[in-house]
Length: 244
Image 1 (tube, rainbow, N blue to C red):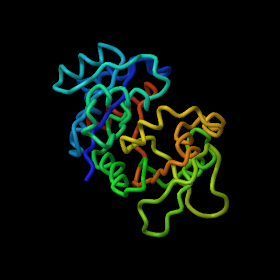
Image 2: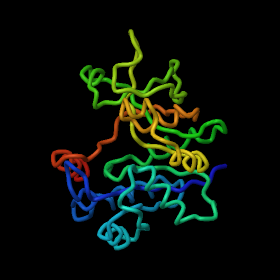
Image 3: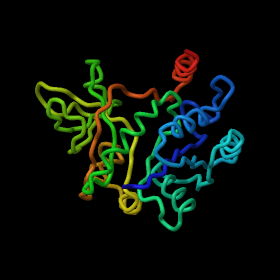
């Protein structure tokens, strides 16, 4: 049995929606909504990994836990690893679930879904996919496709590749990659030390670094893509959903 911790990386310097961790949603900062959803998943403690004191203070003011991290980290994975190393230097938590800080409407069941594949000993990293149902998304380079060979009725499969292109070829389902991850602790410790991969640089997809270095990623199929808040319009949609 794995002993997981959930880490939510958050930073204020978002290009399209500056300060979004503290964006107000019905009287509470967005990061607090995400923290609460993660707590409701019920799989382990939750900590926010932040680089600004305002976010740290907001989380603690609402009863949550947060840790300060280096503001110059190149990726969320590096921020998550620093938070884990600070919070748990003795290695009591052997699995880490990375939940994005801009998912205020996230279903806690989705967090449980991304953690589940790690129970297989050979799996290093777990992530999520959803079947693409909108035709334009198949060719949209902003929709990352995961190549996973799922048989009918199968809900978890090995991820063979990720691309902004429309893959695989010919008839059949295409899967939208959802950027939530769960890591074995040793896998994350190794991942953050690896150099940027050739395909990672070409596709601009960090997860390809793991595949290029022989790490196994399994993907769990979920029914819908969570709403990520990247723009003011996304924020208004999240407010409407949470009000309902």
